[in-house]
Amino acid sequence: MESLAQITDRIREQLQRSRGAVHLAGIGGIGMAGLAYHLYKRGFEVSGCDVSFGRTTEWLAARGIPVEQGHHPAHVERDIDWLIRSAAVPENSAELTAARARGLPIFNRGWVLPLLLEGAYSIAVSGTHGKTTTTAMIAQVFMTAGRDPSYCVGGEWNEGRDMAGVGAGNVMIVEADESDGTVELYAPDVAVITNIEYDHMENFRSEEALVKCFRTFAGKAQRTLVYGEDDSRARQVCGTLEKGLSFGLLASARVRGLEVVPGSGAISFDVTHDGVRLGRVALQVPGIHNVQNALAACAVALASGISFEDIRRGLNAFQAVRRRFERVLDNEDWLVISDYSHHPTEIRALVQAARGIGRKRIVAVFQPHRFTRTKALGADFPPSFEGIDALVLAPVYAASEASLPGGASSDLLALFDRFSTIPVLLADSLPDAWAKLRPLLRKGDLLLVIGAGDVEKVAGWAKNALE
Image (cartoon, rainbow, N blue to C red):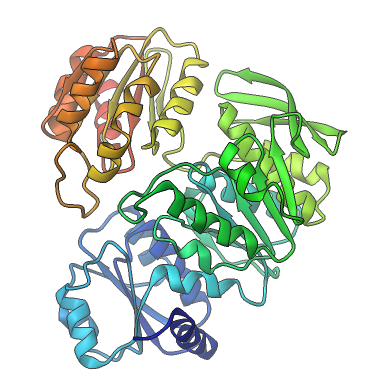
């Protein structure tokens, strides 16, 4: 059996050719699409397939990357040199089986992306929460500073709703995914750990295993390790390392936020570096969590020699990543916000930000993500919704997992009944969730559509019905 070092050498050999054909199975995922685009811009002939088409596959097609629907052996029977597999594509799929029969090299996405950083000034952003927004904020600041970076973000961002971009500068900024443990493969110039909280139970059997993964990543920072001082686990992992540069709201943070003033859909704060006041930032996105994300971007930029004036201009101009507090409908009568939050900590921050807007009531629909997460963190969900006036629970979005006893939405409902006074309705499908949600809504309400699956459809239905 090949070692990971041997696999890495083989991938590096493929990348150094900058030619030939590569096929991506599961190309419709955000991370896969970004990788596909970077390979295409490097000169590879790129193709891909996925079970369904959507915004991401449309984005790829508009940039000259063909996508076929479904997973079929015929996709790999043509002239293909290697194949990259999304974790969402089963190992025993017909397509991968046919590729093995042909002797094609098959690599996981998480093995390939770290190698794209080689030769560039590299920044890799990790953490349980906030890494997508933080990555986009860093890219925005570097663009504003004229550094023309390349980037790969785990969400649709900026006016073109891109998830990846290739610039002329020798800078590569990526979101480093810890969910499958491949964050350990990065050795960036600047490593970022926003926070560390137990998640991805499908791959990590214990919190200690997840922390160990982050510890390995932290130790591989070549120049600077930027970490969240406000998070106890990140502080424990990173606080004693010589290359560490902390950010946060605590007095002990080297890059610190002070005088935080929330507004309706916005928030502003002062920034200090080692006790010296640099100036004030005015974000056009709400929430203390976004202040922390912005402080991480400040720390990265300062460590990279960018002036605070460029940092301020970049952050002030920052546009939210799609499905991160995305205002789908916003008028005097209705406010519909769609958000990717799926972990209790993220939901708590989302609700806090929503309450700061000042609408009469907050009504929400939540689609739990993965049976493993729902079961492991079940009791933590009800308190995170504190401040919601009514809630509809949609069925769990499986994300390729098999059903798990104790991990269904009905199990979550039982926990709400025990630990919360929020009125909760259980739906048996997304259409049923909207049918139960619609009669609850009154003019002046804020509707939160919450979850990392396809629950965003409800936001679209709400927009069409209420607009």
